[in-house]
Image 1: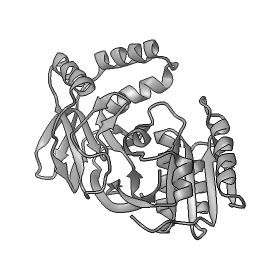
Image 2 (image 1 turned 180 degrees about the vertical axis):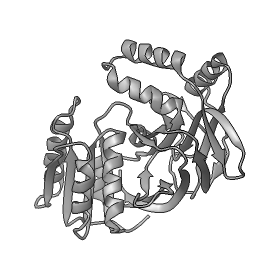
Image 3 (image 1 turned 180 degrees about the horizontal axis):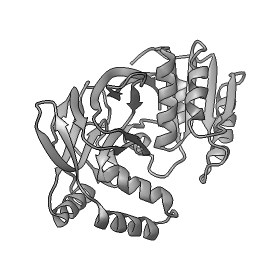
Amino acid sequence: MDAPHGFALITIVFNPNSTGDAPKLAEELRDDVLSARPGQNVRLQPTEYAGHAVELAREAASSRNALVVSVSGDGGYNEVINGVMASHNNDTVCAVLPAGNANDHSRVTSQKPLVKAITDGRVRRIDLLRLSLDKAGVEPVYAHSYIGFGLTPVVAFDLEKASKGAAREMFSVVRTFSKFEPFEIRQIDGEQRSFDSLVFANISQMAKYATLSEAGDQPVDGKFEVITFPHMAKWRVLLAALRATTKGLGDQPSYTQYRFSTLKPMPYQIDGEVKSVNAYIDVTIDSAPQALSILG
């Protein structure tokens, strides 16, 4: 852990059209910080379109002694950290004030209330996941919590189309699961394998309820866990999912790097956001050790 940190500029990034309380929480955070640190330079930065948080965070990171706070869920925080990483300014510090649906990263890694953490100014560094595609002109992207292929992004995409609420969420999951088909990849040794789900996890929990592994709460070991569901009967997948939400999945293998090739276009979920990768692309997931400075 570094020495107490003073910030020349605190930028608070939020979505003004959030279905949650992000605008209100952002204003309250600004007021609380100014109350605790009179004279502190605090700037509210509302986003205007999808992906805008990446640009705002990259711009904020161009300042020295900068703190960039994302008032959001996991997806909004993902955009902020990618903006900061794109700035190549290793001195920039990130934080998240949860204002989303799952808030997995904050729930698992948070050590103290954010205003107190800002006042204390004690910064620590964590690992990130890095996803690289062997495709010209495509820069790596980073994840603070997890990257999932297969069932995970398919369910997430269907949930986005459904209204919020436990009953509708459950209906969406069941409907999607009933139609889901496995996916195939070619591993680095040339073997072709079929999976229902493949998750690369930087934290031990996801989706509010599922415990993926016995990994510690702080991603600082330079490794990530790989949770695989090889293609199996759907009732067995359901049992595994039930185990994840009750007992947890137990110890999982850890890696510093995992490589494979896609055989068809595939969706994937990165910190709650659904994206896609084309067919016949070499994919590398690796750990970026101690890549990000955070507090909270």
